[in-house]
Length: 315
Length: 325
Image (cartoon, rainbow over all chains, first blue to last red; front, top):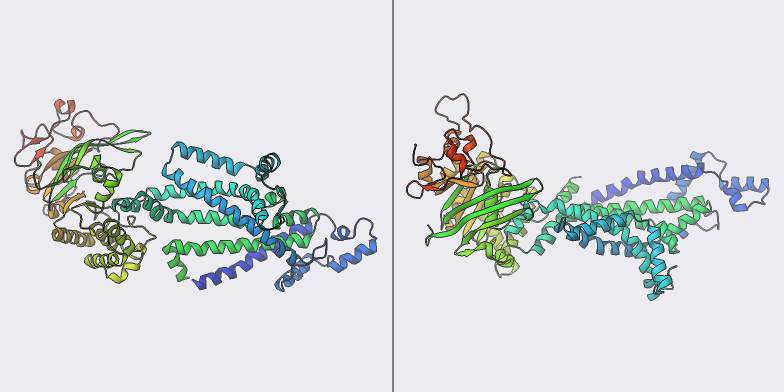
């Protein structure tokens, strides 16, 4: 098992190299001169040239990529073009905000998604099932920012119950500020998780071992949770993991709508101001987070399904 | 017909599956009877309704689409079809257990085999977890699996071993009736004999009755006291093993027996029964077998023949039963 984890961690290296290469390349071929951006329109040609030299922009692309990787290995993600603060400190400062929002969002999604999925599967084709499937379809197709704006209009502007912007100043304030963005984020994930739970439950619901369990005389509740849900868990965990990984990477739209000072908004702002090191740093950070969540999901598999565990042991 | 020895009596059980493509008439008025300590073998082709009958007795027919339309299932004088779900759960596993066809898929893959045996013990006995564990281990030993292997998962066992675990689960609470739905179909021939011996041994020990479903006439001859031949959701011939095997009356039973490969004579082709079983969504009006029967007359196609007693406990559903031999 440990061997497997170490192997998976090592496998993250090529993934991250690939991600950095693609992002680095795209950002460097996109138009706009970072030197002009930093020094402003009035800067003289000499000053611009000097700045370019200083930033290393005159080196060939591959050399710059190599230098960047070397820096990254030393824990240096570069310095922001905009305000000369180190990218690493900015990203790590914003990450906890994103993390807390992601955790609340996924909780909302789980609380809604899993029970709805189970009920839908157990009462397949009932009114309940049809309603929840229609709602789930609306949930996945609804633009997030639109839902966010609607919630703001109803609960902040009209009713005035909850704040619409920012994180508040800790304590109850924070809890209140979390509610709307969490619901916004959670709704879409809930829809995906509902659908996944339903289809995965339907797959196990007619299995022979469910008949065996029923023939033992155990209650329907036990049959549902101990026998069906545990066996249906793998695809559900996969879906939850993917959703959570995405949320951890910063929900750009939601964070923008609610002015949430998280990673997603940092990235949007950096893209707008062509702050290449900042964009690059955030993307790499997100990629790392995503890989870690995926690894955790794979480890959780082993605890759910003994067959997978015995496979891991062999590797 | 019913006497003090009767443990289970099924009367005119009708079960249908209502699907989008029409109503599948899976079981059309089946009556059987099982005496304490005796074994009834049900023989028939795939799709004849044997499994539906077995699941119907335990009320395990998936609904929808399945529906028990009418009939009675009398166990110890109580009609199981009238019990509440709660009361029915006390019957399942404790009084009547079931062994399913395919051991490969009948065990929960994410639970250890000990936990799966313990589950049924804890459900029906008010005992501590430790005691239940002890009993589960005893059960494992009894079916020939070392108790140390109890913490292993089903995928670590072979097919025959899995079927042993399933037998251990089914017999853990010493039920009065065991329903075995083709318990050996999915196993190698060598393992089949072992598993059948094991079932026989445990059955004799606890004086358990058994409903054995199979399409293997040899297995029936070896293990059963009574035989019922099932065709298109009806019993066409019923009697003691001796009566049916020595003096078969229904053309379908004769066809089945004739299709057993003969090792003594030099036969180039296996005997078959011409044609296929009728479509259960569109059954013929009269005798269900009339389409394939070489003795069929117009009278056969008019109405379903009644069960006729041809001596002893031997019953046949054929208008010619008493005429020709």
